Image (cartoon, rainbow, N blue to C red; front, side, top):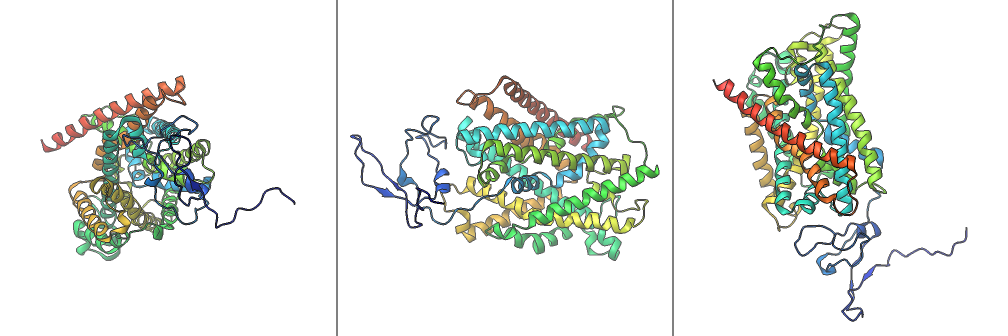
Length: 493
């Protein structure tokens, strides 16, 4: 077919010229930018707050092209909707799934199921608001859009929350590994069932061995590209856990061997009420993925807020189904004996055929899942710490010594945390009441309320929803922190 258009040769380039006051072009300063790469160039104002300067059409932007280095290389096509869904789902589904059956035990089936859906919907709304204003102000990270709305101090606080949240997640991973492999006071570890008593009964020693031999070499890598396939494997292993747990619960329910579950919360004891106060922060921790939303959006092919909203809604639906299936089936299986880490319950006969094999599949499979996910979470933690501690230094990938030093320090602190915190319930109570609720609800609500007065304003319903999320986050944080402190004091007494 004939066309009046001709192919632009690969050797061509874009010439950017700065004009003088009289309108004549100044000396040209050439930069080679692909069309995709050019769209990512952000201009910064005199205050350095990372927001776009100029009108909503992008005219009269005040920036110096000399501030930008030569961009080389061919841009990637980006990921499709389902690739983005997979990445976002990987960011959400992690160790938090193991605490959900225990939250169901505290809340009862009805309230627990409603909260799983409600938290999922609220998280999805907060993600959509975050995407809208990040795109409007051309922010490429969680911290940048926070800075556009509230300044540098707020950005610093948000990055600290990311560090606390990710470090807390990694501590939980090590606790779960210790619970499953070494066992606990009331449960037998996998190694004890396989090999009998041995050095693996020393929980701290076993966690240290796993950390040094398996996790440290992966965490020491400077590039995450080598772990690109581990997300697929980790999600597959998590799905195996959910399917097995749900199938066993259905079989026992049909056979009539499941004890009747409690449908409503228990207010009959002081401990039950205290657990009820701190269980909602644990639930709010389950959907936190907000700090990974913008990087996923940046790599989305043909990216637009509408397409990213579709990604978020599909992801939320998947996570709600997975979480509800796990929480309900886990609680039905073990009832009042459900542990804060439900994996530790899989050390006894399930009352069906091939029970022993299923137990090993569930526990060993999820340990492998955590080993594969651990380095990915550690990478983002290390990058955020480096951004705060070594601002203005060359990228971390260019300094092997700094990268290795940060890796050793972070892994040492995470290991110490895993030996001091008794169980994942305690860890999730604190992170859920502080950093998780801030990242998932407080900051997105504040961003929408602050930036909603500019350009694309908030609709009335969105404004009310933002205020609701902000008030909810404040209440959850206050109640969660008070409940945690009271719980610690009660145990010490």
